[in-house]
Amino acid sequence: MIERAFEWFLWNSRYIVILAVLSSMIAMVMLFVLAAENMLHLAWQFIEITFMGVDYPDFHVEAVGQIISAVDDFLLGTVLLIFSLGLYELFISKIDIAHEGDQASSILMINTLDDLKDRLVKVVLMILVVAFFKNVLHVTFDNPLNILYMGGGILLVSLATYFTHKSGKH
Image (cartoon, rainbow, N blue to C red; front, side):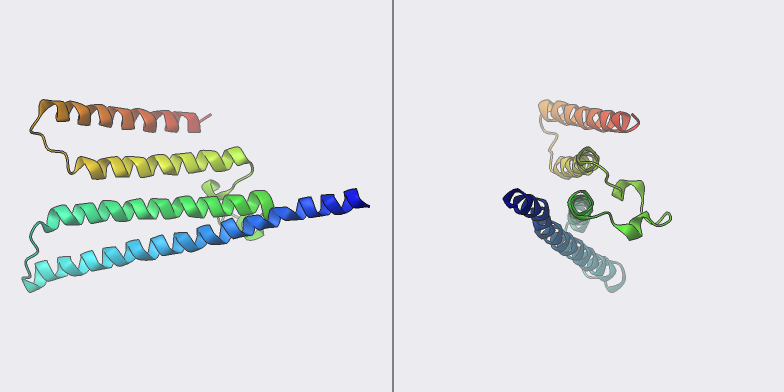
């Protein structure tokens, strides 16, 4: 009797994962809304420059930085979405509507913890690539060593992307 009650409690304790799922979904929505808001503000500045003659010094450099930051936020939001869906499917229940027909892409279908890890690693790698290129915008080429470091960084990012892509085929 005690063993049965304990097993019931143990099995149903998995529902605490709902807190992580809901928190991740809220964070995802916040990131998507904030990034979209920043892009709308940037678009308004572009309209002001193009059609209204307003002058924003260094607009191009700031625009590129803001666009890269928005991509970074959208990718992080995507990580949170995949994480939420994966946790829900692994610990709570399969998402029936996702399995009906061809509604969801295969990246959203999580069957094992390894599936979740593989998908998250790929998106996190993309976030790191975007962050790297965001930082490259601020590199000055006044020293030959900076050029060498940047080339080495690009090589390492390329290798990481190559090996991630290659491992995905097996």
